[in-house]
Length: 216
Ligand SMILES: Nc1ncnc2c1ncn2[C@@H]1O[C@H](COP(=O)(O)OP(=O)(O)OP(=O)(O)O)[C@@H](O)[C@H]1O
Ligand SMILES: [Mg+2]
Image 1 (tube, rainbow, N blue to C red):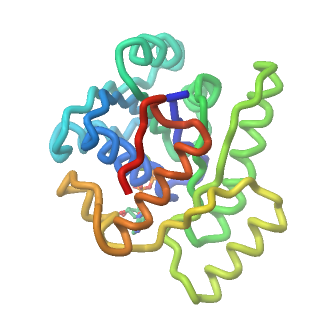
Image 2 (cartoon, rainbow, N blue to C red):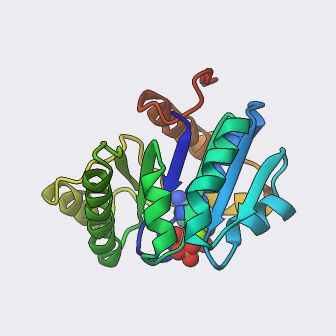
């Protein structure tokens, strides 16, 4: 399995940050990676073309009829494909969910992120029913500020809604923000540790290239 879609109908929840992190970590390890940017803001495309430090193929594609053929083409010629989506439900998002081996739904500390995260998980369940196959999905709790009331509130709400949550939490750390202009994924300190655990979780779910050997 090697197609990951990052999606939530909430804007600014951390989709592109997760996308950059996965792409940078895999490209750094020598994998042939590709990205499809289905967001009209083309943030991921800009990052790949101006900041990424290792080769990444990127396509900005807003035409929903092109998403699946493009991903299929890239999947044949790359080890891994990541699809970043817009912060609102769109037809392109539905197709990006439908062709994923794993969907990641970021939730940052806000109530609106929970509401939209639940909606997105329901959207993925509908897509699974339509396709007659399970589309695995995990909520990623990101920009977490441990020890705060909001962090506890979010954990409680996510548990109450019985959302499937990835084990690793990504904290609100400048190293994740700095990737937007350095292009470099954190490999040391708290961010490096969390990034490595995050990748381990994705590998355990079968969301990474078959030959993936996690260097921890
Ligand atoms: N773990 C994190 N630590 C610190 N900052 C973060 C983290 N995750 C996201 N951010 C910050 O939150 C902001 C929004 O993140 P991002 O652009 O990834 O969201 P998005 O879901 O892609 O937004 P959009 O819907 O507009 O595409 C950015 O400034 C980013 O640097
Ligand atoms: Mg984005």
